[in-house]
Image 1 (cartoon, rainbow, N blue to C red):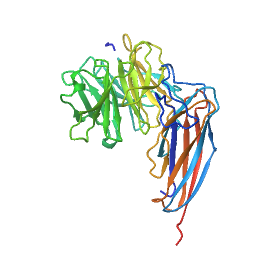
Image 2: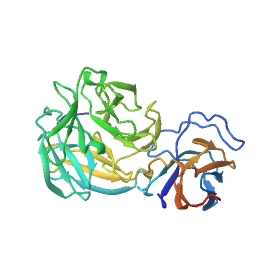
Image 3: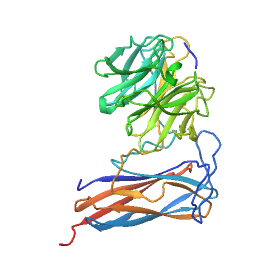
Image 4: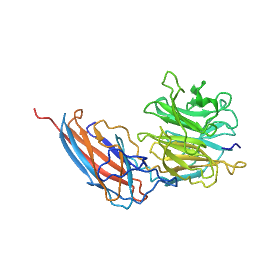
Length: 401
């Protein structure tokens, strides 16, 4: 054991985010401040969103402007961040809400965790293999040895690359790097190795960012998180940037697509999971894992619905303590970019009693006549009722001849 089209659906999401400063403030806006670290970044503010729904009509080939009003009816500042997108709306649960948690069976010491095609993959760092489970913890027949991974620490955290149908995974030893294997056969189809700053020491956590085909990799040996180029780049593995997280005991990483939020699992006395700004490693929120055993934090992945899958490594002798896999809410719905919908502001903070009008632009210059549906998701940093859904209906009329 080692240590440490005619009808489309769109989403505009307003996310909670602590800000160190807010520029170009409206009269009701407040200067942001970094909240203290805790179970979750929470204020006693109350964000009211009006109207409760939006209906927009526009001629094909033209643009239209609408708006929502944000009002802080609480007693302290409320923070928010706006991002727009399209795609089926999802509700991954409130941050930290436990959706599933089960003991991992048939392993010695579970560590890495990754999701693909309804499977939850978990790595065994002692038996040197990866095995597949249902989301409810039933072990599947699909499972593969990892001869490319050295024992202690063995195959670690993993991240799925949908465009290549490959699961990529941290490997350590004589050749620190990333191995990418076929979940249907276990065969390694690609790898990332070479002399880079991050390969100078073993890493533990791995996350894949699909919008720019890149990875985040990090571990406690260096206490740093690297943003590196992915398999489609001429120089895969080369460093784009790096930053030092607030807790340097990095054990697992995950990426929330569309929100530019990097999740970090740690192996430390509290094993906190952090949501970080990926460019600066500034803390946006923290949450405690369901497993209360200290210093057992391990792999992390973001599921297709936006929820977090986290792994607590086993302690002691198998089989009774081979680890716990848990699915918890991230508070963040999943979406992709909506080219015809945009919010005029991306982030801000409202002081008590403050109000702010957020312009919502609809661009029908490339939309066919018909009806479109959208949803505005409003997340604030309140503890209760932090998610507000505002239905949006768009009618695109034919242009006059």
